[in-house]
Length: 231
Ligand SMILES: [Zn+2]
Image 1 (cartoon, protein in one colour):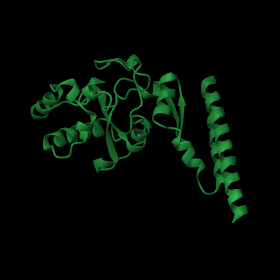
Image 2 (image 1 turned 90 degrees about the horizontal axis):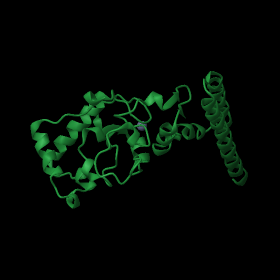
Image 3 (image 1 turned 90 degrees about the vertical axis):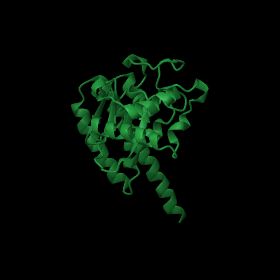
């Protein structure tokens, strides 16, 4: 996995060394957002371009692929949030790119088993969620492609789904205009997936998702019915 991590050229390294040698009190997450520092801008571009390519234009959390030339569609992501842990700002292991939706949902949520750690945790078991550079995604989450359902296979998977808001794909679907038809189709797809479920845990999760879709669909149908009555 380490072969995929970003490497720094001498001039970028000098810039990062200067930041790392600041006193702990002087290191702040907001340093990353400075716009008047061309050396910082260069380092940031290098990091972002590197991870877009090594991740093959794919978000490590929702696994959605977005092959767009303009790198503004991606956020450089500090896996351990830079606001609480500015000392890990340029650590290659702590960097990746993520889609804006996942990054926005993740914000400053805790991802560490031991949040008081002072040094960079380097093992998979130090993290409560699926680490983009340390974990194999498919061991923790199964994606049902036809319906964009995310099934947690263990606690890391479950935490990732929560931290990154991956159930948003389900809710987006139930917000469509023609509720009853869409909900029906959705449940039809889920039903097929349910037939292919290989373990009890998969089956249980699909069933609870179906229930969720039905409830949401009913709720929306009720609201639109009331709105129609009052107009
Ligand atoms: Zn994403």
